[in-house]
Image 1 (tube, rainbow, N blue to C red):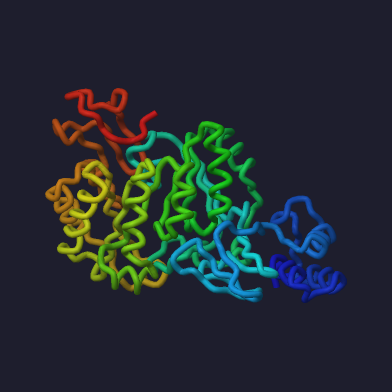
Image 2: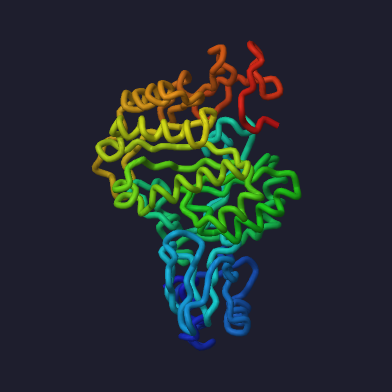
Length: 390
């Protein structure tokens, strides 16, 4: 039994103080790494007296359903929950008629990344993003590369306490230009993302979402006020595929993309092409037409190579020719900036001016080899290249 689970039992009043101390010693796990300087007794008192555990904060979007249930209104799942039940995301739970997030400030992944890793190719090239995630996700992508955190509860991940102010200070101290809420799904740690974004905006840092885009409109509109850029995984353009492989609704994702653009968020798209499942060229063409019509030809589209992960380990990696064919289709349909990820080829990762055809940013993998832009313009013809450049 882990210390987190022991503390969870205290919080639910399943253990007495004496039982807690006895079981925690038997577990052989100290709280130093997980809970800072708090002692066992301190943690027990925090749980028993305050009634809340680390990571808990009342959720922003929910409604009461009678005296015993609440309905979460954060995402289209709209889980109806009684006390002690977890939402589909695994990180939201009601207590005495109030809905709580269980991961506020509980970072299970913290890294310094090049912004190109998100991938965001039209946002501060060559800069660093302070990347953070908590446990949980409101989707069930069978190919998830981060399933060890996204498909887990906060009790199952190794967490560190990193409250919003500390997160922003850490980003500044590490010379980052942005904070990226990423790896799992930033919308399920919404309250944490929102609070950190507000603080970061005041400190001059950019806020970046790497998201599957699954959220209800009202919370999306609220957080867009503090978000500068987002890479949204448009995982496919087939409703059945989205529903059965990802537990998503295509219409919800498309509506949210339009909302983000209308709110001034710089949007880039990633489409992971999974062999035999979403590699139909007709659907890829349909997706590209929709992007041009509804979002505009200047929205960058990243076709990404699938590698066997999680529940799709028996599939083969995406053939490079499939990715090149998808890129060719996107360019034929009038999209200006189309990239290929997970295949190290400079000619498919560099930014080319759509007016004169000259290369203005050269990349290899996550590295910027050369950036020729001058105030966001092509140095050869003067054409404006859309993005966040400074």
